[in-house]
Image (cartoon, rainbow, N blue to C red; front, side, top):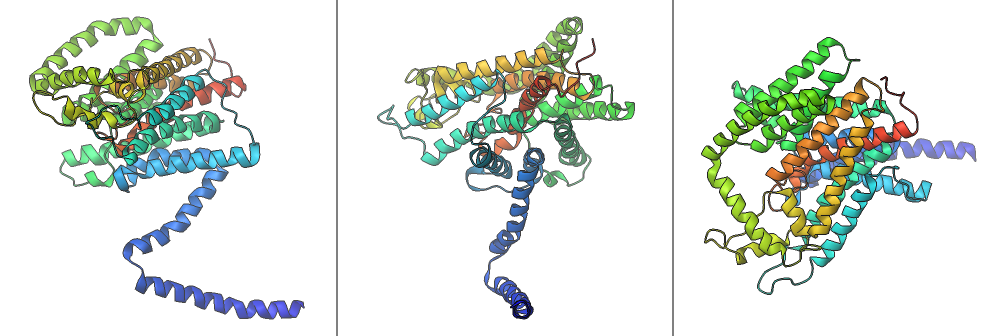
Length: 456
């Protein structure tokens, strides 16, 4: 029998090779360029799945960087970051169902407001199917699902980091990978084009949340990570200065970027030393006054129309103040409430107004509860982790949290609105949820005593 099997294998091998060659030839002649690209992507996709199964934290690195370098843009702004985060969530749930057979989240007070926010968002999605205004159209189901997906994937990113990053080395790798690629993005997209080099399209556009976390993490590591060599700390300091130069001098019109970044730095300094923070108050007040007068002079129309939009949004929110009007629906209701005489669709340009309009006051309470718990966690952890990377990360996270709070007032940057920043904004917004999830990851390491006690 064995000689027969060996003979059969010898005969089959050439047939397999010939079949593969014929298949390749058929694809080359019959398949379109797009189909060929999809065929080539299959092994990459399989490789990514296997890698994420083996090293989930490595998948988080891919997710955080994919949006910066991968130009893919699918229907309605679907992007590589959303796909990878969705894949990671699916693999995590599959692991829970098939192996662990129980859902067990990280032991943290931040999890409860996050899950509550998710629950309220799901209920509000259902509420959004009700006919709130007789003469108004509903947002298409795809837009409503897109708005819900932003919240689900944002919360999912947070939970993935909180539950799967169990080692300080992986949290460090995620952070340094982001700082490295982030620095390249600033240089290639902003610095080199300003010098006349056509390199802008080598990296993808980013939002203020990207700059918030680039500045916060680089500044805190440069200032407080005593384990880093002085040369690298100087490099990080230079990165902060270059980024601020880009934001203030090359992107001044994007006030969400530079204003939030300065808030990050002030929050980090204040969290480290209340005396230094107190000394910064008059400087910050003077700078804020100077920049605000400049903004009013150059952007008065935009500012005034935002206040008009918010007053109209208050009228729309009254229709369903508890659980909101569902996702993206208010954009279709706004033509019934003319703004400055024009019956047009508009959005609020404010994350907090969007949250109330879409998920109601209950959703806003859950969201603010989450921000409060994250602030408390970071404030408490800074005294319980050792010096070096971990402690610097805590201060960076507190700065990033403060920056995100401000950015949410200036636009829908933290939870992108479907008809404004859109799904494509998740490329940048997910970074905030990822690095805030790192706070919970550090908390779990302290609970499991995987970190030495901080030296007083």
